[in-house]
Length: 265
Image (tube, rainbow, N blue to C red; front, side):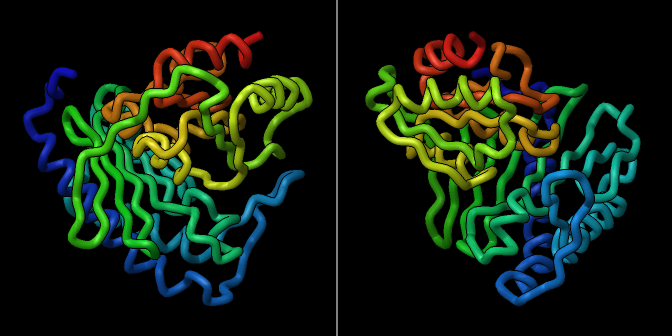
């Protein structure tokens, strides 16, 4: 993979790390602390907490100081300056349902796009102390004193593959039927995980993630992490995943192509 055309990449990456640190300071005091939960509305329970709002506010305040000219797309407080060439993508707690249950399968997503193209991405899990991010040509994992490059694993056969999905609740009947066909072909399927699943895929722990109903901020920060680790991420039709919707990620390109035949049928 060629390097990014942006000479300030390392500076932007340092900003992403700083934003993740600031969000962690806001979020952690609320985790497993019995905080109040609000419902955003709609037919399905869509929770939001003071931790979500506080973390996104902290990130926005920091960006206003560091890069006031940059755009922002955020889950809780909408969009600003989306016509800017550089735009930050924020999901303060991806996996709020897991968060309010006390499960550590959530994370803060921070991404940066350049001209609409994902430039870098980061997923931070402050409770476990794990952080995943994309460099210019590789993806990385850090926890405590450990830091290393990560790669997806080779897996070309369904019978060897592990498939994950946050929940089947987000599929309509037709989508669920296709997902079940895929699930019956693989060795193992597991539910739950939100953004954590995609990072496990980049790390070579799982092979497929198939979901529906994603928003741009759910997937944009994860795209460069997956791709620079050697994986593939598209819509179920093989299209651009940046707008969210029905998403398929795979660690092995051959497995991705085979899964697409099932999900796009």
